[in-house]
Image (cartoon, rainbow over all chains, first blue to last red; front, side, top):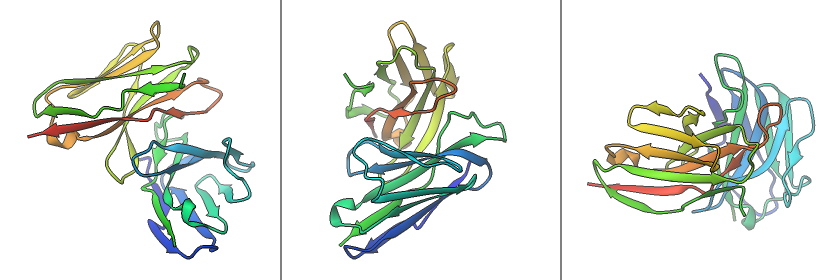
Length: 119
Length: 112
């Protein structure tokens, strides 16, 4: 149990392009999903927290108009990087927490991540 | 002071060694604690939750010291495959509120 998928696994795009990343919890209902960004040799940085059906809560310094989050259902959240620039190149990881199947609600299960390279 | 602090390492140990990591947290109201491991260029994976009574899973033992506000991870009989970054994770608000803080990680290299 507790499988989280992320798609795509990597993206190369031109500057100015918008990129959408999907995060799905495959075998449990994710009441909360998190989006992180990780630069090389640095720690995970939480970008935003989203609960199904409500607006995402963004961390300080993260532009909500640039990083659009939609948590449309209990199994799907999307992150759209709008008008991506080279400095947005990073490893984007989602995680989910939820209930069912004996899962501990405060445990986060991570997707495999998406590597974004903006040229 | 950071909310969650870890010694970044790296720890370089030979196979078979015992190694211990500590992690301190600043919010005394924190209720939930975890250790994750992250391999290079991969996502973090849950290693174990940390309970007040301490818990053990094979070669891994986690302890919680509320009085001193730290958690520890002990790895016995280190294997080459244990080489990774170990992340300390704290939920500072406890149940009913959910905000998880990750430490910066401790890097471990196990050598043959």
